[in-house]
Image 1 (cartoon, one colour):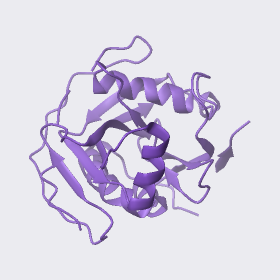
Image 2 (cartoon, rainbow, N blue to C red):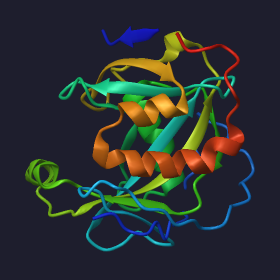
Image 3 (tube, rainbow, N blue to C red):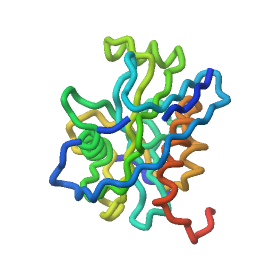
Length: 217
């Protein structure tokens, strides 16, 4: 179901969060060891590290799983309909990553019925391709090389009709339509320069996800 809106580097694979009343925050998870992998794409530099590096915009990534933890929310961008992605957004000055993730989830999807299940242990960093870097920095008035992301796995505890791509009305909508996907589908539908980070984030979250007993159609 699709719902419409109204030069690779070693992954050296960073921690941080403000409690929000809208979401229940369970105990912190036990963090797995660091890993190291590479991407074949010449446009992508992915690094994971204990603190966000200089020159990269700090950002949160949100992996929103359905109530059964079998599928993941993914949405197509209004400006690039062929680009599907998980929610993400910048961290405000003085804001903790966990609080930023709760806020961005609400702003981009309208979702408040969710709980944090897991947090990736470190920051995952990717470089923008040259054309994307030029476009985004012109928009932001910055000179970021790319983004350093802290990833969180949420379990959705509401009903699908709670999801609203107009968000909470505080920001301009970013998505045109959304659907639940398997983790592999999320990676396959993502733009090339985000795939290595998606792969690494989902590698951390796989132990918390469940196999889908329903075959994909």
